[in-house]
Length: 190
Image (cartoon, rainbow, N blue to C red):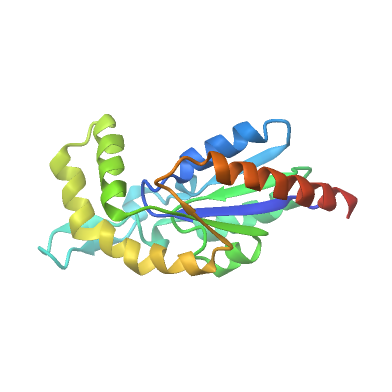
């Protein structure tokens, strides 16, 4: 049986993790493995430093492909595909960026959300982690928004499905449940 591999991408704070959590709850009886791209960050000292074009301030660039062990993620997905999972989920900022990872995906989903909503969510999330408003807003305005345009936004067009990250996911998850129930059953027959 070949697992059905789903890639979920989108901008920072677009709703990717929330979507995955709700998806897993809906498919709780299925054998699912989830890869979160954040688990593949390189050590902070090994991530690129970017000088902001706005003010020449230096930032550790967590939104650049070179900040991730993408080859290791690819290898781990390949290994998992030979195991007994029914569904494999790959979730992260750059899931659709890497061509090798993208080639493994049976379904590519992009969670789309307006920038103003994403920054508000990012502020709430990161302030709960102890970062200040100024720290979060400065890195967003000086770096993250440009990296989003450079590396994330243009991958939307690789997606099979673009989901509105500003809305409740109930309807799209119901549609996916019917679609994936059929796909997973077909994979079991192979």
